[in-house]
Image 1 (spheres, rainbow, N blue to C red):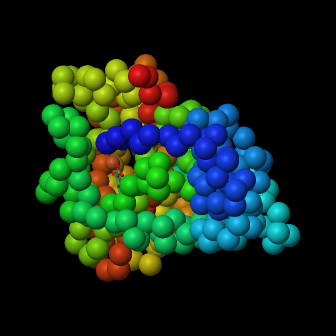
Image 2 (image 1 turned 90 degrees about the horizontal axis):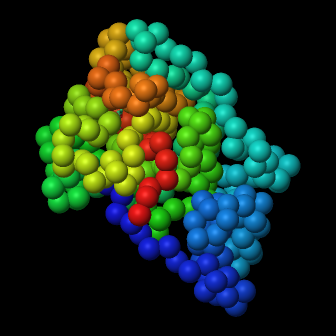
Length: 284
Ligand SMILES: O=C(O)CCC(=O)C(=O)O
Ligand SMILES: [Fe+2]
Protein backbone atom coordinates (compact mmCIF):
# COMPACT_ATOMS: atom_id res chain seq x y z
CA UNK A 1 0.00 0.00 0.00
CA UNK A 2 1.63 3.28 0.93
CA UNK A 3 5.00 2.84 2.54
CA UNK A 4 6.07 6.20 3.93
CA UNK A 5 8.80 7.73 1.79
CA UNK A 6 10.92 10.15 3.81
CA UNK A 7 10.34 13.78 2.81
CA UNK A 8 13.59 15.44 1.70
CA UNK A 9 14.56 18.52 3.71
CA UNK A 10 13.30 21.64 1.87
CA UNK A 11 16.06 23.85 3.34
CA UNK A 12 18.81 21.60 1.95
CA UNK A 13 16.99 21.39 -1.39
CA UNK A 14 16.72 25.18 -1.60
CA UNK A 15 20.43 25.56 -0.91
CA UNK A 16 21.28 23.03 -3.62
CA UNK A 17 18.88 24.71 -6.06
CA UNK A 18 20.49 28.09 -5.38
CA UNK A 19 23.86 26.49 -6.04
CA UNK A 20 22.62 25.47 -9.50
CA UNK A 21 21.21 21.97 -8.95
CA UNK A 22 18.19 21.65 -11.28
CA UNK A 23 17.11 18.31 -9.86
CA UNK A 24 16.95 19.82 -6.34
CA UNK A 25 14.86 22.73 -7.69
CA UNK A 26 12.51 20.15 -9.22
CA UNK A 27 12.20 18.17 -5.96
CA UNK A 28 11.39 21.39 -4.14
CA UNK A 29 8.80 22.25 -6.83
CA UNK A 30 7.13 18.86 -6.19
CA UNK A 31 7.08 19.33 -2.40
CA UNK A 32 5.69 22.86 -2.80
CA UNK A 33 2.99 21.66 -5.21
CA UNK A 34 2.01 18.88 -2.79
CA UNK A 35 2.30 20.94 0.39
CA UNK A 36 4.74 18.42 1.86
CA UNK A 37 7.36 19.80 4.23
CA UNK A 38 6.46 23.24 2.85
CA UNK A 39 3.12 25.09 2.62
CA UNK A 40 1.30 24.30 -0.63
CA UNK A 41 1.82 27.16 -3.12
CA UNK A 42 1.14 26.51 -6.81
CA UNK A 43 2.70 29.74 -8.11
CA UNK A 44 5.88 29.07 -6.14
CA UNK A 45 5.91 25.47 -7.38
CA UNK A 46 5.66 26.57 -11.02
CA UNK A 47 8.41 29.15 -10.45
CA UNK A 48 10.66 26.40 -9.09
CA UNK A 49 9.78 24.17 -12.05
CA UNK A 50 10.90 26.99 -14.37
CA UNK A 51 14.08 27.38 -12.33
CA UNK A 52 14.74 23.63 -12.66
CA UNK A 53 14.25 23.87 -16.43
CA UNK A 54 16.56 26.89 -16.69
CA UNK A 55 19.18 24.91 -14.78
CA UNK A 56 18.96 22.26 -17.51
CA UNK A 57 16.92 19.57 -15.71
CA UNK A 58 15.26 17.92 -18.74
CA UNK A 59 12.19 16.43 -16.95
CA UNK A 60 11.25 19.98 -15.87
CA UNK A 61 11.41 21.17 -19.49
CA UNK A 62 9.12 18.30 -20.52
CA UNK A 63 6.60 19.13 -17.77
CA UNK A 64 6.52 22.82 -18.68
CA UNK A 65 5.76 21.81 -22.29
CA UNK A 66 2.78 19.79 -21.05
CA UNK A 67 1.48 22.52 -18.73
CA UNK A 68 1.97 25.63 -20.91
CA UNK A 69 -0.93 26.87 -23.02
CA UNK A 70 -0.59 28.18 -26.60
CA UNK A 71 0.35 31.59 -25.24
CA UNK A 72 3.23 30.03 -23.30
CA UNK A 73 1.59 30.70 -19.93
CA UNK A 74 0.46 28.18 -17.33
CA UNK A 75 -3.14 28.81 -16.29
CA UNK A 76 -3.11 27.02 -12.94
CA UNK A 77 -6.74 27.89 -12.05
CA UNK A 78 -7.92 26.09 -15.18
CA UNK A 79 -5.58 23.17 -14.54
CA UNK A 80 -7.07 22.65 -11.10
CA UNK A 81 -10.73 22.72 -12.14
CA UNK A 82 -12.45 19.98 -14.11
CA UNK A 83 -15.50 19.57 -16.37
CA UNK A 84 -18.69 18.68 -14.46
CA UNK A 85 -19.25 15.01 -13.55
CA UNK A 86 -22.27 13.21 -15.03
CA UNK A 87 -23.99 10.57 -12.87
CA UNK A 88 -24.35 7.19 -14.57
CA UNK A 89 -27.60 5.28 -13.95
CA UNK A 90 -26.61 2.84 -11.26
CA UNK A 91 -29.49 2.06 -8.93
CA UNK A 92 -28.30 4.38 -6.17
CA UNK A 93 -24.52 3.86 -6.14
CA UNK A 94 -22.64 7.12 -6.76
CA UNK A 95 -20.74 6.46 -10.00
CA UNK A 96 -19.87 9.51 -12.10
CA UNK A 97 -18.34 9.94 -15.53
CA UNK A 98 -16.24 13.01 -16.33
CA UNK A 99 -15.72 13.39 -20.04
CA UNK A 100 -12.55 15.30 -21.03
CA UNK A 101 -11.08 15.18 -17.54
CA UNK A 102 -7.48 15.34 -18.80
CA UNK A 103 -6.08 16.61 -22.11
CA UNK A 104 -4.55 13.97 -24.39
CA UNK A 105 -1.06 15.44 -23.91
CA UNK A 106 -1.29 14.78 -20.15
CA UNK A 107 -2.46 11.18 -20.75
CA UNK A 108 0.54 10.63 -23.02
CA UNK A 109 2.89 12.22 -20.51
CA UNK A 110 1.56 10.08 -17.63
CA UNK A 111 1.99 6.95 -19.73
CA UNK A 112 5.56 7.94 -20.72
CA UNK A 113 6.34 8.25 -16.99
CA UNK A 114 4.63 4.94 -16.12
CA UNK A 115 6.07 2.88 -18.96
CA UNK A 116 9.47 2.60 -17.30
CA UNK A 117 7.97 1.64 -13.93
CA UNK A 118 5.33 -0.98 -14.74
CA UNK A 119 5.69 -4.39 -13.12
CA UNK A 120 3.18 -7.16 -12.28
CA UNK A 121 0.38 -5.70 -10.12
CA UNK A 122 0.31 -6.79 -6.49
CA UNK A 123 -2.51 -7.28 -4.00
CA UNK A 124 -2.11 -5.67 -0.57
CA UNK A 125 -1.40 -8.23 2.15
CA UNK A 126 -2.42 -6.80 5.54
CA UNK A 127 -0.36 -9.45 7.37
CA UNK A 128 2.93 -8.26 5.91
CA UNK A 129 1.92 -4.72 4.90
CA UNK A 130 3.39 -5.50 1.49
CA UNK A 131 2.04 -6.39 -1.92
CA UNK A 132 1.88 -9.95 -3.16
CA UNK A 133 1.11 -11.46 -6.56
CA UNK A 134 -2.37 -12.99 -6.84
CA UNK A 135 -4.47 -14.46 -9.61
CA UNK A 136 -7.11 -11.75 -9.02
CA UNK A 137 -4.83 -9.24 -10.77
CA UNK A 138 -3.07 -10.39 -13.90
CA UNK A 139 -2.40 -6.84 -15.12
CA UNK A 140 0.75 -4.75 -14.64
CA UNK A 141 0.98 -1.61 -12.50
CA UNK A 142 3.30 1.33 -11.82
CA UNK A 143 3.07 3.27 -8.58
CA UNK A 144 4.35 6.83 -8.24
CA UNK A 145 5.63 7.19 -4.69
CA UNK A 146 7.27 10.41 -3.52
CA UNK A 147 10.66 9.86 -5.24
CA UNK A 148 8.78 9.34 -8.52
CA UNK A 149 6.43 12.30 -8.12
CA UNK A 150 6.54 15.28 -10.45
CA UNK A 151 4.62 18.53 -10.83
CA UNK A 152 2.31 17.30 -13.63
CA UNK A 153 1.28 14.35 -11.47
CA UNK A 154 0.74 16.71 -8.53
CA UNK A 155 -1.58 18.81 -10.74
CA UNK A 156 -3.52 15.67 -11.75
CA UNK A 157 -3.84 14.57 -8.10
CA UNK A 158 -5.03 18.02 -7.02
CA UNK A 159 -7.59 18.05 -9.81
CA UNK A 160 -8.88 14.62 -8.77
CA UNK A 161 -9.08 15.66 -5.09
CA UNK A 162 -10.97 18.87 -5.89
CA UNK A 163 -13.39 17.06 -8.20
CA UNK A 164 -14.07 14.47 -5.49
CA UNK A 165 -14.30 17.17 -2.80
CA UNK A 166 -11.71 15.33 -0.69
CA UNK A 167 -8.38 16.53 0.76
CA UNK A 168 -5.41 15.88 -1.50
CA UNK A 169 -3.47 14.75 1.60
CA UNK A 170 -5.74 11.68 1.70
CA UNK A 171 -4.77 10.46 -1.76
CA UNK A 172 -2.77 7.22 -1.89
CA UNK A 173 0.15 7.08 -4.29
CA UNK A 174 -1.18 7.21 -7.84
CA UNK A 175 -0.93 4.09 -9.96
CA UNK A 176 -1.04 3.37 -13.66
CA UNK A 177 -2.47 0.00 -14.68
CA UNK A 178 -1.66 -1.70 -17.96
CA UNK A 179 -3.72 -4.58 -19.31
CA UNK A 180 -2.46 -6.65 -22.24
CA UNK A 181 -4.98 -8.75 -24.19
CA UNK A 182 -6.64 -11.20 -21.79
CA UNK A 183 -5.30 -9.55 -18.60
CA UNK A 184 -7.81 -8.38 -16.01
CA UNK A 185 -8.41 -7.02 -12.53
CA UNK A 186 -10.97 -9.55 -11.24
CA UNK A 187 -14.12 -8.64 -9.26
CA UNK A 188 -13.20 -6.79 -6.06
CA UNK A 189 -14.08 -3.86 -3.82
CA UNK A 190 -11.65 -1.00 -3.23
CA UNK A 191 -12.70 -0.38 0.40
CA UNK A 192 -10.88 -2.10 3.22
CA UNK A 193 -13.15 -4.53 5.04
CA UNK A 194 -13.83 -3.01 8.52
CA UNK A 195 -14.82 -6.52 9.74
CA UNK A 196 -11.33 -7.83 8.99
CA UNK A 197 -9.07 -7.12 12.01
CA UNK A 198 -6.04 -7.22 9.71
CA UNK A 199 -7.13 -3.86 8.29
CA UNK A 200 -7.83 -2.21 11.66
CA UNK A 201 -4.48 -0.44 12.04
CA UNK A 202 -4.47 0.83 8.47
CA UNK A 203 -8.06 2.08 8.85
CA UNK A 204 -7.22 3.84 12.12
CA UNK A 205 -4.19 5.55 10.66
CA UNK A 206 -5.38 6.41 7.17
CA UNK A 207 -9.19 6.14 7.23
CA UNK A 208 -11.37 4.36 4.69
CA UNK A 209 -10.74 4.38 0.94
CA UNK A 210 -13.93 6.28 0.33
CA UNK A 211 -13.59 7.01 -3.38
CA UNK A 212 -11.82 5.75 -6.50
CA UNK A 213 -11.01 7.71 -9.64
CA UNK A 214 -9.90 6.11 -12.89
CA UNK A 215 -8.59 8.14 -15.83
CA UNK A 216 -8.46 6.30 -19.16
CA UNK A 217 -5.11 7.12 -20.74
CA UNK A 218 -5.85 5.58 -24.15
CA UNK A 219 -8.79 4.18 -26.10
CA UNK A 220 -7.24 2.24 -28.97
CA UNK A 221 -8.30 -1.15 -27.63
CA UNK A 222 -11.41 -3.34 -27.70
CA UNK A 223 -13.18 -4.67 -24.60
CA UNK A 224 -11.48 -3.71 -21.32
CA UNK A 225 -14.52 -2.03 -19.76
CA UNK A 226 -14.79 -1.28 -16.06
CA UNK A 227 -17.74 -3.40 -14.89
CA UNK A 228 -19.85 -2.80 -11.75
CA UNK A 229 -22.21 -5.01 -9.88
CA UNK A 230 -24.52 -1.99 -9.49
CA UNK A 231 -27.03 -2.05 -12.37
CA UNK A 232 -24.73 -4.35 -14.36
CA UNK A 233 -22.98 -1.16 -15.46
CA UNK A 234 -20.11 -1.51 -17.94
CA UNK A 235 -18.27 1.63 -18.87
CA UNK A 236 -15.09 2.63 -20.62
CA UNK A 237 -13.93 6.13 -21.23
CA UNK A 238 -12.37 7.75 -24.28
CA UNK A 239 -8.78 8.88 -23.83
CA UNK A 240 -8.77 11.54 -21.05
CA UNK A 241 -12.20 10.65 -19.60
CA UNK A 242 -12.53 9.78 -15.91
CA UNK A 243 -14.77 7.59 -13.79
CA UNK A 244 -15.23 8.62 -10.16
CA UNK A 245 -17.20 6.63 -7.62
CA UNK A 246 -17.89 6.52 -3.91
CA UNK A 247 -16.95 3.29 -2.16
CA UNK A 248 -18.90 4.27 0.95
CA UNK A 249 -22.39 5.56 1.71
CA UNK A 250 -22.93 9.05 3.19
CA UNK A 251 -23.01 7.50 6.71
CA UNK A 252 -19.50 6.11 6.16
CA UNK A 253 -20.52 2.45 5.81
CA UNK A 254 -19.07 0.50 2.89
CA UNK A 255 -21.19 0.12 -0.25
CA UNK A 256 -21.25 -3.49 -1.52
CA UNK A 257 -22.77 -2.37 -4.84
CA UNK A 258 -19.42 -0.87 -5.79
CA UNK A 259 -17.92 -4.31 -6.44
CA UNK A 260 -16.25 -3.97 -9.81
CA UNK A 261 -13.73 -5.43 -12.22
CA UNK A 262 -11.34 -4.30 -14.94
CA UNK A 263 -12.36 -6.58 -17.82
CA UNK A 264 -9.70 -7.92 -20.19
CA UNK A 265 -9.08 -6.15 -23.50
CA UNK A 266 -9.80 -8.37 -26.51
CA UNK A 267 -7.46 -6.38 -28.75
CA UNK A 268 -4.84 -3.75 -27.94
CA UNK A 269 -3.52 -2.59 -24.59
CA UNK A 270 -5.57 -0.73 -21.97
CA UNK A 271 -3.85 1.92 -19.82
CA UNK A 272 -5.55 3.63 -16.93
CA UNK A 273 -4.55 5.89 -14.06
CA UNK A 274 -6.02 4.53 -10.81
CA UNK A 275 -6.38 6.79 -7.79
CA UNK A 276 -7.66 5.57 -4.43
CA UNK A 277 -8.78 8.35 -2.10
CA UNK A 278 -8.97 8.21 1.69
CA UNK A 279 -11.26 10.71 3.34
CA UNK A 280 -8.53 12.46 5.33
CA UNK A 281 -4.78 12.91 5.78
CA UNK A 282 -3.02 10.01 7.58
CA UNK A 283 -2.54 10.19 11.35
CA UNK A 284 0.76 9.25 12.94
O1 LIG B 1 -9.03 -0.93 -14.76
C1 LIG B 1 -10.19 -0.92 -14.36
O2 LIG B 1 -11.13 -0.72 -15.15
C2 LIG B 1 -10.48 -1.13 -12.90
C3 LIG B 1 -9.34 -0.72 -11.99
C4 LIG B 1 -9.67 -0.89 -10.54
O3 LIG B 1 -10.59 -1.53 -10.16
C5 LIG B 1 -8.85 -0.21 -9.50
O4 LIG B 1 -7.85 0.42 -9.84
O5 LIG B 1 -9.22 -0.30 -8.31
FE1 LIG C 1 -10.86 -1.33 -8.01
